[in-house]
Image (cartoon, rainbow, N blue to C red; front, side, top):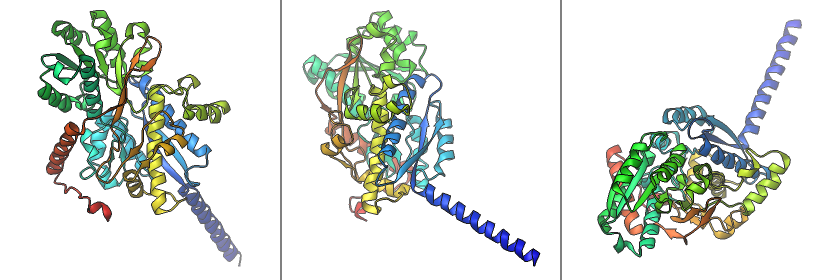
Amino acid sequence: MKLRKIVLAAAVVATGASALVAGNAMAQAKEQFIPVLSYRTGPYAPNGVPWANGYVDYIKLVNSRGGINGVKFSYEECETGYDTARSVECYERLKGKGASFVQPLSTGATFAITEKAPVDKIPVVTVGYGRSESADGSVFKWNFPIAGTYWVAADAIMQAIAKKEGGFDKLKGKKISLVYHDSPFGKEPIPLLQERAAMHGFNLTLLPVTAPGVEQKATWLQVRQNRPDYVVLWGWGVMNSTAIKEAQATGYPREKMYGVWWAGAEPDVKDVAEGAKGYNAVTMQHGAEPNSKLVKDVLATLHAKNQGTGPKEEVGQVLYMRGAMSAMLAIEGVRSAQERFGKGKVMTGEQVRWGLENLNLTQAKLDGLGFAGVMRPISTSCMDHMGASWARIHTWDGAKWQFTSDWLQGDEQIIKPLVKNTAAKYAADKKLTARTPADCQS
């Protein structure tokens, strides 16, 4: 009898433990998990940190509002150091926790994870970076370069330069040098710039810089010798401030320099300050937005309660806003998925992929999310994974960034054929069958 009671007691304990485990699983199942691949250490940390702070703060802000239809978000950061191998390790470690999507924050890592995403069924969201040809959703079913690619950035820069010169026809015979990070990221604009050079007759010189870019004296010696009419800077992290300092040392006019949107934030110019005055960079949708509703909401909801992720002073700066925008776009993909697959439910990666393919962020929706005056509408589809191709130029005035151009839209007559042809080559190399619009209906 005593033995029977012990067995019964054990059974009750086991049942209770099972119920507890099930309860925890159910509790966890009500949270949508987001892996956060970030770099807060190393030579890229000054730029990586504000992006990550904006990204995490936006997740916290959404949770403070009750999540999406009651579903809150959990997240875990993994330090990558902007290293491709470490980024892939982070992805592999975190994907099993039910990743809704992944944002690698590295073009090199994007190239590596692109091969894994179709097997793992996890969307790869690359807001303003990654593979430019992945805008083609017929081939890249799992990649989402939402809001703009490097070909859009390069084209917007060329439009700005052409306008300054009085038209594209005035570029004939001009010399333009591309100073670029010698990596997949840095090489992305080359096809677009080569296409523009062939069309308009300017001479393009390619000047690679070895990562992380702290030594550029030889590069800028070439700039001084070649005397280009313009320099396009495709850098990241310490490479950017180093380039601007070298330009100053060699007497190259900063007003004739145009950076990509990863070379146009406060960490790139603050140490040079007045010496960077006149330096231009393309911006992806947004710039520094200290007066936006989103910033006011973050300050009131998080920082006023000591729940902000980083220093209050950086809220609203360029990279902080980009991190927040990146989180918002992906989370809105979750909201879009819930509209089809069930409000208040945790979405699978495949369901989130559908949501990201069916974003319809009208201006009214963006305004409601706190992005009034910051962004233009974005609408994706099964075939178009970018959804918008708008950018502006902002210029450093010695103390802050100021918008100095109207909205610029990437020229689809140039970009679309590049996307289609490059994506088709990828599909042929990987033996993939491209989707058709009819496939999207299924």
